[in-house]
Length: 121
Image (cartoon, rainbow, N blue to C red; front, side):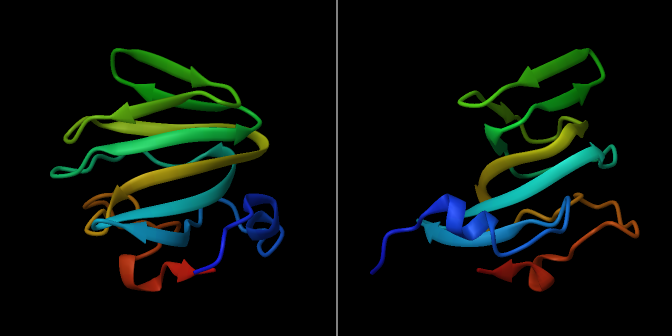
């Protein structure tokens, strides 16, 4: 068992909107990602999705408004709620979600990273 240093983990990749798995706890995966620009509108029918911003600014666009997250702030998107993450350049964030959570829900796009293709770092 080793401690995890987030800055070290973030230095291992440059891709945006590509979740990297850093640990697991009780069936929940802890993932980190970098964001810039907009992802896609999607939802997760059976899973809540927690976003915690570590650097930059992440906006979660919802159909009834926007949630703007700055470093140290988090928000849980409830299951079934359609959302579109949008980030300022070089935003770093963490997600905590069940292992069953698909990157862009049921939506398959050219930016979708399937659950089995999400890399452990």
